Image (cartoon, each protein chain N blue to C red):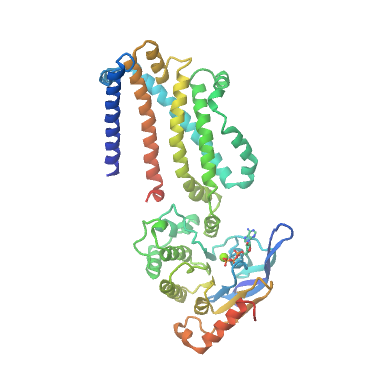
Amino acid sequence: MKKRQLLITYLVTIILIYGLWYVLSLLLGSNLLPDPFVVLRQGVLELDKAPFWSHVGLSLYRILAGLFFGFILAVPIGLFLGSNERFDRLFAPLIYLGYPIPKIVLMPIIFVLFGLGDMGKIVLITMIIFFQLLITTRDSARKISKEVIYSLQSLGGNRWHFYRHVVWPISLPGIFTSLRIGTGTAVAVLFFVESIATRKGLGFYIIDAWGRADYSTMFVGIIALSCIGIILYEVFDLLERKLCKWKNI
Amino acid sequence: MSNSLLCVESLSKYFPGLNKPKKVLEDVSFTLSSWDSLAIMGPSGCGKTTLLLIIAGLLQSSRGSITIDGEPINGPTRKIGLVLQEYGLFPWKTVEANILLGARFQKLKIPEKRLSEFKSVLGIEGLDHLYPHQLSGGQRQRVALARALILRPALLLLDEPFAAIDAITRERLQDRLLAVFGHRQFSFIIVTHNIEEAIFLGKRILILNNKACGLCTILENPGVGDLHYRTKPGFFELSTRLRNLLEGLD
Ligand SMILES: Nc1ncnc2c1ncn2[C@@H]1O[C@H](COP(=O)(O)OP(=O)(O)OP(=O)(O)O)[C@@H](O)[C@H]1O
Ligand SMILES: [Mg+2]
C-alpha cells in the first residue's frame, strides 16, 4: 500500500517536472533549455553506451565508499562518546569546533595529502559524512534514561549488551536521518570534486557536456546524478523502516 | 532470625551536595525472611527508590551492610529482580523480547512452559509482537513484572508498580502479584504511596521519614492478603497510625 503510494508520488512529480520543463523550454527556446523529449531520447541512447556507465559506476563507487568510511568511523565514536560522559566532555569542544568548518574548503589540502585520484575524493566525502553522523549519533546516544540502564544491569546485562541492546537501537533512527541528509551533501560535494582535475565521473560528464554546449547530454548527466541521490535516500528510508519498526508503528 | 534472606544493617546513603553531603538514608535496618513481604512508605524524596537501588546492587551505600543469603551485595545479582517506577521496558523491543531480555543476557534457557504460565497468570497472552508504547499502562506494568519474575529471583523489588493505574485494575494486579507470590514463594519489597496497598501487600510496613532522619519505623501488619480487612476496625487503627507516621506526628 505504502510502496504504491510512494511510486505514484514519484510518478506524478516526474510528470509535473517534465510538463513544467517542456513549457519552460518552449518559452525560453531550446538553446537555453533543451526540449525534455530530446533529453529523454539522448538519455536512452546514452544508457546503451559503456562510457556513460563507467562514469555512473565511478561516481557511485566514490559516494558509497565515502558513506561507508564515514559510517564505520563516526558511529562507533558517536555511540561511545554519547554514552560516556567523561570522554564526551573531553572531546565535545573538538567536535563542535570541527563540525561547522565547511569541509569543502579543505579540498586543496586533502588533494595535496591524498592525491587527485579516487582517494582524495573519498576522503573529502568521508569527512563530511563523518561529522554529520558523529553529532547525531552522539546526541541520540545521550538520550538514554537511567531506568533503562538500571533495568539492563539488574537483568544481568554487561557493557557489550549495553551497546548492542540499548545504545545502538536508540541511536539508529538518528543515524538514518543523518545518513539521508548526508547523502544530499555528499552528492553536491561529489559533483564539485569531479568537476575539476578528473576525466571520470558524472561531475566531469556534466561539465564536459556543458563545455561542448551539448545541453541534452548535460541534462542526462544531471538527471543521472540526481537519481543516485534519490535512490540512496530511498534505500536509507527503507532500511530505517525495516530496522526501526518500533519508531514507525 | 535464622532463616533471613535479606539483612540490611544501619544503612546510610549520602549524595554529594553543593556545600555538604546530602543525607538521604540514615541508619536503616531490617531483615526479610524467605517467602516474606515488606511494604515501604514515605514522603516523596525520602529515599525509597534509592534504598531499592542499593539493595539491587546498582548504587553504592555510604555506610552499613546488606547481605543476601549471608553474602554481601556488591553488584547486581541473579537473586534479586527489580521493577522500576517507570517500568524500564525497552521501547525498541517487542513484549516477547523484553520478557526474555534477562534470559538472553544471562544465556539462560527459559522453558516454554514457564513462559506461558507466567503470561497467563499475569494476563499478558497474545501481546508478544507488540511494542511497549502500544500497550496500556497496566499491561506494560505486567510485562515488566513478567520480565523480572521469569528469572525466578529470590527477592523481587517493586518501585511503585501500580501507581499510574486505575483503582480497579490496580486491585486486580495486586491479586495477580499475590497469586504468583503464593505459588512461587519468593520474597518481595514493594514501595508504595497507597496505604491500602501497603496493608494489603506487606507482611510488615516500613515507614521512612526524611524530616527526622534516622526515624525508620517497622509495623507488623495483621491484615496482609486479607481483602476484607479494610472493613474491620483494625484497619482504621493501622491506617491512622500509618498516616500519622507519614505526617511525622507520631
Ligand atoms: N544521583 C543522585 N544525586 C544526588 N541526589 C540524588 C540522586 N538520586 C537521588 N537523589 C536525591 O535523593 C533523594 C531521594 O530520592 P529517591 O528517588 O530515592 O526518592 P523517593 O523516595 O523514591 O521519592 P518518590 O516517592 O518521589 O519516588 C531526593 O531528594 C533526590 O533528589
Ligand atoms: Mg521513587
